[in-house]
Image (cartoon, rainbow, N blue to C red; front, side, top):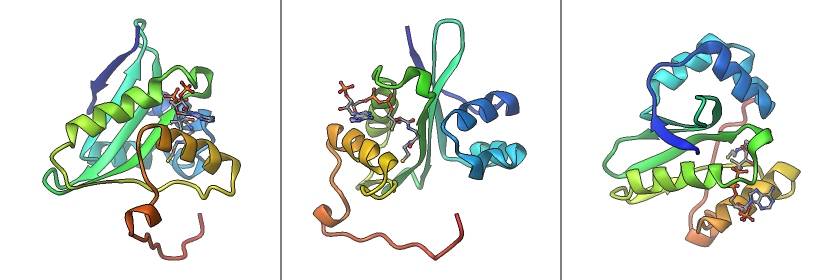
Length: 143
Ligand SMILES: CC(C)(COP(=O)(O)OP(=O)(O)OC[C@H]1O[C@@H](n2cnc3c(N)ncnc32)[C@H](O)[C@@H]1OP(=O)(O)O)[C@@H](O)C(=O)NCCC(=O)NCCS
């Protein structure tokens, strides 16, 4: 059985292993910074099995009134396609149902990760920014 719950204390090794499982080196290169960022997030939810093993995590940035951004959503690849990502995101959709904007960014559809993620978000009812008559911008940082 998979349990979704809110968490506010983070074990660096456990977080390293989860973020490393999806190759997010931008976070794993400095795990203390990752944990500070998790603690500074508006909400962090995890998916764990009955033995407490961490399967996935999602976190948000929000004013809890109008806007919610999903910063990270990740599931250990050993547990992909078991509905865990869907449960994490459905939990956030309900938690922030009062917010006018529920937004996120992801890789472009021309990449393999983008194709998978677009299929995932579309299966959960999301539209692209363009389809919502919006655009997204970011400064040209090196990733
Ligand atoms: C994106 C991610 C969170 C999805 O998590 P997941 O637990 O595997 O997804 P789910 O099992 O809940 O999938 C729900 C639905 O999304 C769609 N979907 C998910 N992965 C898919 C894939 N690889 N290809 C096509 N459709 C996919 C399917 O419709 C799926 O339903 P189905 O399995 O009944 O067909 C996961 O792939 C992941 O952690 N990726 C690495 C990190 C990442 O890129 N996160 C997103 C950053 S924005």
